[in-house]
Structures are given as C-alpha cells and as structure tokens.
Image 1 (spheres, rainbow, N blue to C red):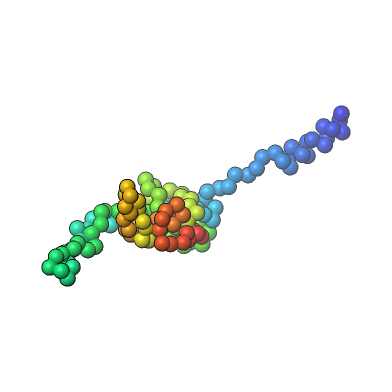
Image 2: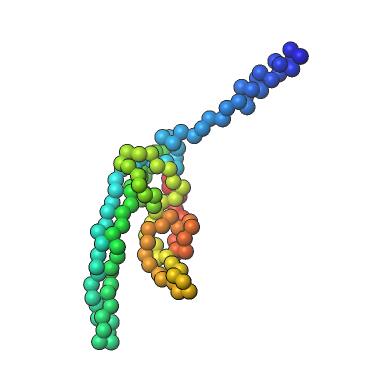
Amino acid sequence: MKRLLLLFIPLMFFFGCDEEEDDTTSCNCGVVTDLVTIEANAGELVSDGNDGFVVVGSHDAYSWYVVQNNCSGNIAPTCAGNLEIGQIHCMDYICVFSECVTWIGADFQEENMLTDCVSSNCDCEPTPFN
C-alpha cells in the first residue's frame, strides 16, 4: 500500500495543475493603444451620365480600436467594441476593410466594411494577429 501511495504522489505533481496562459504575455494578445473614430459622410452628388445624379462616398460613422501585439510590437485594428485604452485584448485575426456582401431578404448589397474576414461574406483572407 505504501508503494502504491509513493507511486501516486509523483503522478499528482506531474499531472496536477496545468498552467493557464497569461494574457499579458500571449502572442495573440496586446494592449489597446487607441480608438480611431471616422465621422459620418453624406457623400457627394455625381452625374450618372444620363441626366441624373448618384451619391458617392456616403457612409455612417464608425470606429475601431488599435491593439499593439505583446510579442512583435505590431499594431493592428480589432473588430471588437467596448474596449478601454490600456486594456489587454486577445484576438486571432486583425480587422481590415473589405468589400462584403450583405443579404437583405432575397437581395444582396455590396458594401465596404470592417471585418476579420473569418465569419463574413467578404473578399478578403483572414490575417493572423502576430
């Protein structure tokens, strides 16, 4: 019985507790350094060539946070919202502007939007945050 107990003691130390990854040093995490805000733009009227006009360049206001990677020091935008400057934030992919397809009922609309290119119908490839 003592031998069995002596066998289990080293096993408890070996398999006991897994170390959790520390977000402050993980290479897919970084510090939120800035909030970039772009004001809404009504666009401008441009002739469509057929005695009519179209609005070009209009968009709603939008913003994104900037994160500096813990390991590389690279700076990248994140699609996450409600962050605070100085907060540690982890993400697998950076956010980019891409032309995306949004389904509205039976129709679709193409628009440029901020996306991580993973879970959207956008014309881009996911870019790892490192």
